[in-house]
Image 1: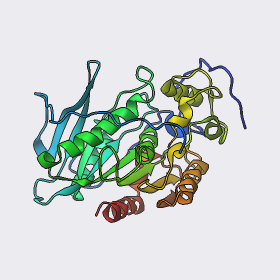
Image 2: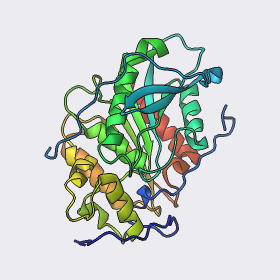
Image 3: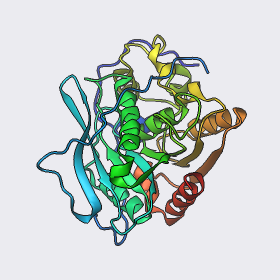
Image 4: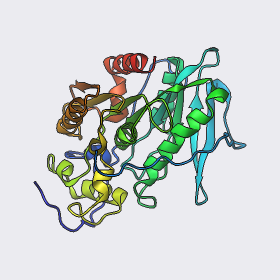
Length: 322
């Protein structure tokens, strides 16, 4: 096992040749859809309280089934926002899928093209897509991001009637750092997955399951990779970071966890061992873990450029949120 000492001050944003937990270092992810309308025992974070009613801004867009920049949470003066994408021609209650962007826990935004496209894609497929932002490191360290995401789940259920959502059918899809958060959302808590801040389906696109020293020792991580994770965790050394286990989805796996679809590429920055370890942990706990390893180097939302991956995601969501 590798032991890392003091943090490096080298913080250059490197995206070429990254191994280990490269999925968390902020490399861009991109996707394009032809015809799209717009291009148990560390303590898991407790679910916070959400706002009961949507708060809207004057700049909110409501055309094309997208209601944008809804404030779903306020924390110490920070307004955390989300978009709702839905098809207006459906009268029945529909399942909801929350979308969690990546960006090394320190960057990224729901308004980037790939996440707007994903939001529209899922809406056209019959889901109500909740495309959300969350507070970012290093200003807001763990567990701020997962607390925001849990609040977004509560907001979704609180406002289900407003947006035509079936509150008992809520899932999540995340990419890169957002996939780690999606996994953590799925393994946090216990009990029924159709209530509170729990979800019934998790789609992870290039998500790291283990942020501990053991997980970071996979491959040969660069200093910048370790620094990004440490910034998120609020630690100075990886071998002395109590938050690492709490922030690792694999730590919290139990028999109550929802179904998981774990997707990544063979040669991308996230080691396949991360996905294999999470799948094995879920299976050992009696859970349902489906794994799709694609050839090539596509990372996070770039995986959705492949028709096979899009079909697998829709098939998984149809079976788990039916």
